[in-house]
Image 1: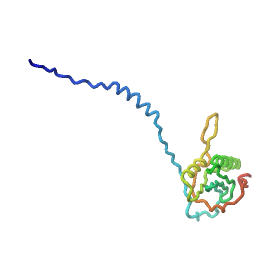
Image 2: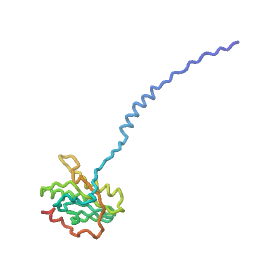
Image 3: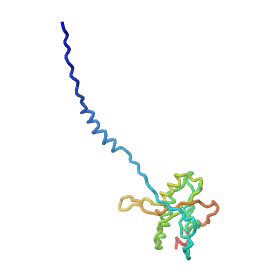
Length: 181
């Protein structure tokens, strides 16, 4: 007897269930993905040479935040200490720094001065995260306006420099006369 084999037909590939899975999975993964946001800060470097074309130089009206390992010092005008903020639990008190800078900004606005620039002076061994956190603190603060939180501007024009020696600042801890008047 002869055995006759039937020709087998190839089965169709059914991908319907796989397509249904992809239709659901792709939007869920896209919605849960964290998108990275890169912020660019424009910095100004101080001039290397003094401006010789200016015959009447302006009085030093610079606002400075000096970063030391054990404290933050606010100087206004440059070199005159307005406030020295000691560390809390071995870390800088950026909340207090923001509070004092808001007060300085308010007092300058009452005098009719619109100040947007600030110098951040740091020591050579200051870590990167401390400098970035200081820059974020002096640039803006969270304010409540009409029952919503918005970022209010403090001093967005930031310049970087080297900190003076630790004993070089003026020990005046009151607000400078130019700020209080």
